[in-house]
Length: 233
Image 1 (cartoon, rainbow, N blue to C red):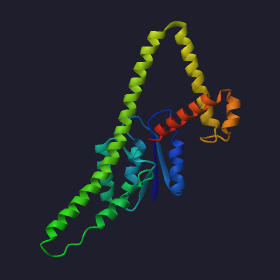
Image 2: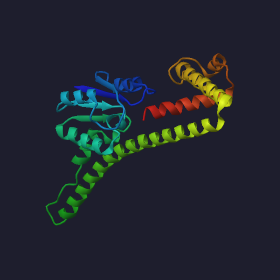
Image 3: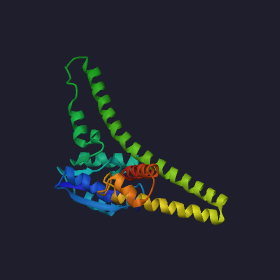
Image 4: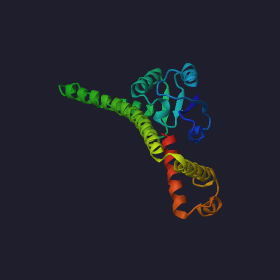
């Protein structure tokens, strides 16, 4: 059986992109999906259901390693628990840590010669084994770092917004809030209608519909692209 697991941790994220990516690569995959806030594996009801159902020979597909876990220690432990159970793991954005790749690295060992040199060859084999394991752990560590960095930037942004709000105050603050709201509405239209994202309109036509200048349009569009990239991390 082929299973796909999709997860979002914030309301602003779109789980449809993960589903589309998995379904495109594995059309027969049964999709498990859920919204979850946090980094620990415990508490994911759909993930727990999948863990009870999956068996030797089955395959689980993730859009990225961060969808399996953004906690490095727990994610690495879960990876090898499933690997030792005979479950195949596929990470569309990090294929270098697929269990098939890891398994191949373990089978490509240097053959021993039955001589004194075997001491050295065995040491090399053990080193390569540890190197492959380390590569997997690094992938989970990177996923954890990205979410930690995002949380830190969010906290800093909130603090700065509060600081500026107190400094501006009164009518000026209200005006600024309205401007921000108007900007977000225009960005939402770009995301929804631009053929670069979820829509069908060209940049030229969309600029006329929204009613903003060329430079402003492309600035907002770049921000939308950056936000989507962060959502998929």
